[in-house]
Length: 279
Image (tube, rainbow, N blue to C red; front, side, top):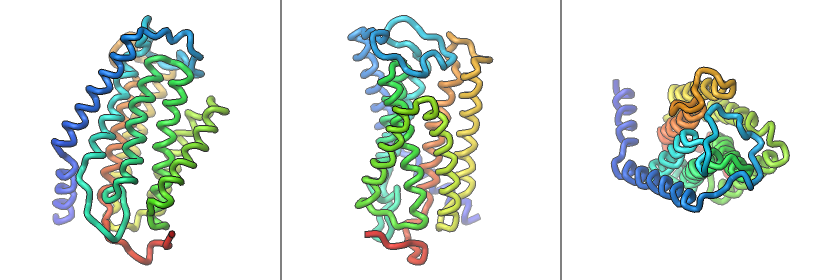
């Protein structure tokens, strides 16, 4: 009973009207940015096309907004990123977590905001530049999940977290540029590895919830099913507002929100026997 009440209180703390307001402002800002780009009426066909050009089921329209629904659905990444960034921080001087460290949370939220912009630009233009921005953002997320999972064995420190995150993300981006065909599958593989490491290395951490991790994975799998259906170009009408790839965007963004909630449940009290001291 006490555990259930504590979980309910933690969920209530996750609901914040100030964060919602900031999130709405960020979303409106993205619509404004999209309108600003459209005012220049760019001709995307003069740019190098994405290697995934035409892969999505949504029809390619005339003008500067080639895939409107796939574009708009990606805004949710940025909205959630801004929402999480403005959530209250846990006061602690004993253990560095995403709930207590501005830098670590900023890295996570920056990945989401870049995803919102990058994925949107990709589907707006279907250019190689947009594709690189799209892949870069998801690799930033993948790198974060992989590195943050190590907190179960190594005490987090801003001295090494940020450089490590940048190096791993850069290596993944280089792999994407030279091996663009496998990059989309690499993302899925990295997520699976990240979730497995999260469980193996942190399951004994106080506050760890396997249920929230299962929820995150379930949402991802549900979205991936829609991604496959969209890829096969079945069920969805090319000109409909309901697109499988757009659902995939929404589900991944929601999974990121669930993942942050999973992280935030962790206690800020350190177990000195669980860590190896790092600079």
